[in-house]
Length: 119
Image 1 (cartoon, rainbow, N blue to C red):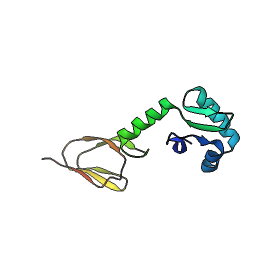
Image 2 (tube, helix red, strand yellow):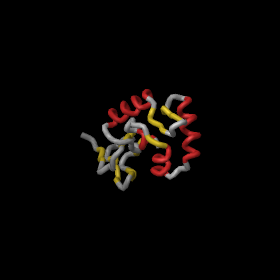
Image 3 (tube, helix red, strand yellow):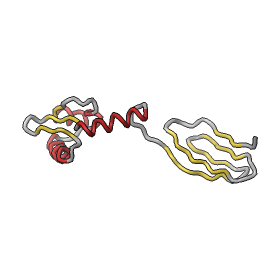
Image 4 (cartoon, rainbow, N blue to C red):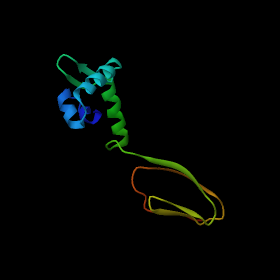
């Protein structure tokens, strides 16, 4: 529903229901609740809804920081022993040093390759 509303324009519940395949009755309930919390502006008499001003500002700020549409982001921590490695997303990461290496990974695109060695 938020993807439909993200343009900030008024949308009919019927339009949204068709787009996201949800009964209009459920949307009426959701929009009433979200309206009480300021997430959306909802006119129950005319059956139209739009993102609330404050919530739209938050979304726009998040999108600007990400510089892209909402995406899933991978994250994790891995400790690789000396002369060992591990595989993530089909990429093998090698530790070619003589000590443990700790990796803090955050990514939103597919990895290609990472190799760690002594300088």
